[in-house]
Amino acid sequence: MSILPPAERRSVVLVTAYAALSLLLLVIGERIPATWLRGTGAVLFAPFDRAAAQFDRMATSWTETAALHERIARLEVENARLRLMAAETPRLRAQLGLPAWRGLALKPVEVLALGGGDPMPDAATLSAGRNAGVQVGDAVLTSDGLIGRVTEVWPELSRATLLTDANQAVACEVETTGVHGILKFVAAPRPRLVLSAVAIADTVRVGELVVTSDLSLRYPRGVPVGTVARIDRDATGLMQEIEIAPAARLARLRHAFVAPGPRPPADGIPRPKLEFEPQRVRGEKPPVARADRDTTGGTR
Image (cartoon, rainbow, N blue to C red; front, top):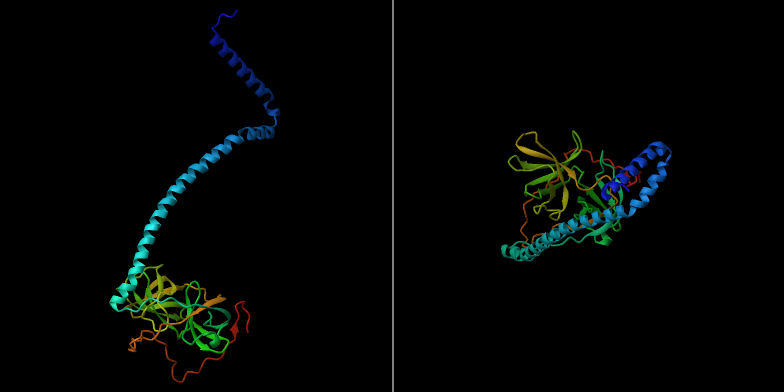
């Protein structure tokens, strides 16, 4: 009969068993296949891993659901405010005697060819013409933004002059601040779109969106043109010269939309001319006809 109490006897037995197991593992541990042990462990602990992963997903879903509910609530409040403003805007414009906003009637067209500008195309041949309702002066845009306007129309085709044509000018404004300027293409010392006639005192920041202005005689208001890429001073040092990164990829046009430009004033009173087209110097030879490049890079 053992002289040790029952609890101590159990402890001695457990310690002896652990010691024997340790000695056994030291002797034959290197001979036990590790792959088999890992596989057995993976099978044994797989239910616990799945339960832990499920718990983690539930906790994450709970947190994301709460955040989504909060965002939905904010968006519903914002949507209600915008609906109220949308209902008030027509009444306010009518009280102020301002013309009502009108949606753009977009006519989809295909860009069949791009005219050979150097180094960027300055014209595009469109797949719709007079028979489809296209008129000279209509604006041409893509889903990204403005690309030019229709300058020639035939029964089945039309030709658009792009923003990269030196004779094009667009009255624009910075969307956030309402700063006005004239957008034009400058070829030297490097080709770029420049927003000129912007006073030094006007605040313009890199990254701001530039859209067509309501002061434009040729383009509907609010069409994206590009974003501010760089801000410098002009040669006089009195005005800002702002480089604009075009919203549309003018060198890779395949499809576009034609939209009518601003309508003449209802009262018949002409508006001030805020856009200009540089006149060709007297005696200058007309440009030589150039081959049109199709959108795949060939000529036609």
